[in-house]
Image 1 (tube, rainbow over the protein chains, first blue to last red):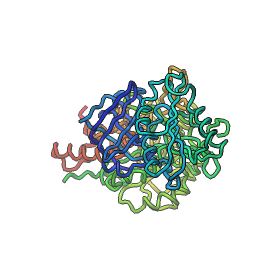
Image 2 (cartoon, rainbow over the protein chains, first blue to last red; image 1 turned 60 degrees about the vertical axis):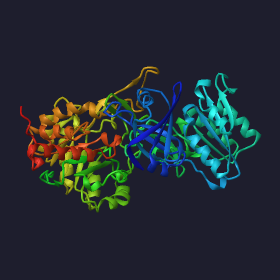
Image 3 (cartoon, rainbow over the protein chains, first blue to last red; image 1 turned 90 degrees about the vertical axis):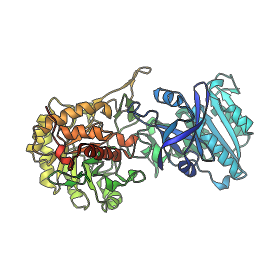
Length: 265
Length: 303
């Protein structure tokens, strides 16, 4: 992991509250794997103080991209950045998804909810390069929350789109689409990123059908590299539940290891 | 070439910049970002005798120029530290200070007795001021008697110098510092975090799993400087200043107020090389002011 305090922004796209920033960070880019994240400064001074954890959305040549939703002061400041300006980024951090060569020629699902789609774009391209048949299951609240749907379609990814209100794609949760699609033809592997209730449901669906699944957890973080122990999730370690650091031991966990039930902790 | 070294009496530091406990992991987490040997030293994350679970999440909330944490001293315990971490720290030419925790006087003593059997530790920092482990944020550093009792027991049991880390959540930090000195502490470090709370107004729930937490970061710096100044003007033992330091200028405020060394805390989480930025700032200041020995400026505030 490395610090690049002056990664030059080379591209910006925005769709309502969703923003994609591309920047040049050659050394970090060379090391990056899907599912890893960056810690990004949003201001130069002490306010807002902390970096923001953002999943690596894409890698193209020497450039990396982050895709995020404006959700507060920090991301609002980040959204104001323009090409030509610089970003202070730390990374790549965390463990990443298992992009296993044995998935070549197999069907895999990538399930994303809202801004949780961010790391799945990078993953989808890496899986495609490997020769896996990737199906994107992309869900959001409304048509405004699935801004990347057109891109997945244009890039010829097999995609199932859902919105809670039916304003785009199928009406309902993305997990309902997952249940249906997995019922038609079970994939070799499920990868997912999104809000906790969605991930919990993905884990349950995968377990019921005996499909291996990896979940990328979202969390606020202090440092992003294991020093503060601020971002923890209940995870079974050697069969025993423990508070495990999302930044260092995750953010990607095998679905069966994550403990969601507050009573079983 | 400026001499940045400082003398704590029991320990000479190559420079006054220490990384603060709880913000620097066990040190090794920072190796990808900086040469640990450039630091005056670092204080590893607090250790109880055994492993400790810590608090339920959320454990962090960001506030204006600050951070409230309620980690709850999750940690690996002394045996795992001695086996897995310390052998990798021992060869470093920098002061490794171990932050010592205890749920009772006896536990502080047990931790120190265990660590006394290990080489490669420069001093103990007594953590009697964490606001996240007892009900209502209480801690031994609230009371001169409880503070003195722990210091006395640890000094009696252990062979190494003791730094006592004090809480700012008291009426008179001077009174507690004097009690620690009387009981034989070799230095005091102040301040630990300020007891704090944040509420999500949408749900009306506390933002932290532990309800209360400790506020750190630039927001607290002026209060910490004030407390360091008050304590340093009354104590004979050296004072180590902690609280919101991000830059050389910030560190200089504490040194000029009377601190002989400083600890950089929350800034390490934002910039893992923050200690080096502080060091560079100190060097630059000395150059600009023609100061040959940085130690000369300690306690020189003109009041």
